[in-house]
Length: 331
Image (tube, rainbow, N blue to C red; front, side):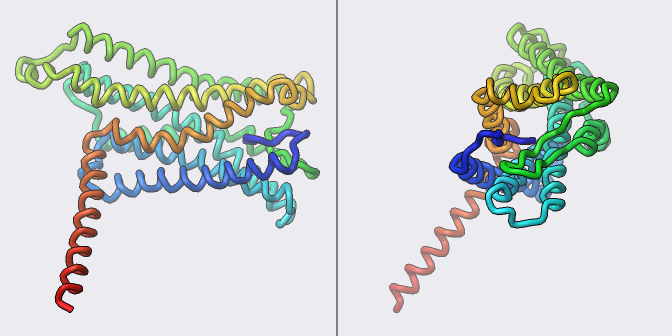
């Protein structure tokens, strides 16, 4: 999806867009790849909730890749360093990554809220199993892949400066309705249900209405502490992801719908609401960078692994410095 390109854009603006897209894309990919590697290489983190964090990081990697590819297209707009068919293919991949990542993230956030609802509110005796979460993740991406119809069929890279990459006019109203149904079912409804579940959890915590067994009383008596350490960080991740991504997505689908009736609507909209477009685009870019930093707050075991890695690195450095000093003294 096009984060920054408009028809009246100057070359100086494109240079700024290149720096932002390339740097933010690389940093976000590095952060989220680190999260994935840490979870996959530490058996203690292979738990249902952490597996959902891993899946959310994969979604953020797709967003970051979309941002990075947009930076490459910005460079192409200035220098045309590759043939047009390759640039058009990159445009198609960029839009596809951005479109599929959002339903994947929203459905993952919904699953995380259900998992926390089961674990904290003690509604079920059995928590969500690891094998169940794996199956859910597969289903999430199968469902999210339905949103790829529009970008695959109608993605467009203009053949003249500034080489806008966007979803072109869809002349089939049935496809537009299908896309709107998909976005409502895969993004808006999951976000709404997620917020309802977290509201119920917080209500139960503050009003001590959690159904527990007598043997669990000692653990649940620390409810407010558990709320602060688990629910609130996850709630921050969920709200930030939803508020930074969903509005940007809705603008795209609103433009797509209006283009069916008025082919030049996108140009008119960007000319009148360019600042709103840029604001939501910047928030969308920031999401995959902020989320990995919030994961440390959401999972205590994740924090312990990060802390142990930092401590080991620090102790190894201190040992090396001590050996170097010792050798210098002897010489």
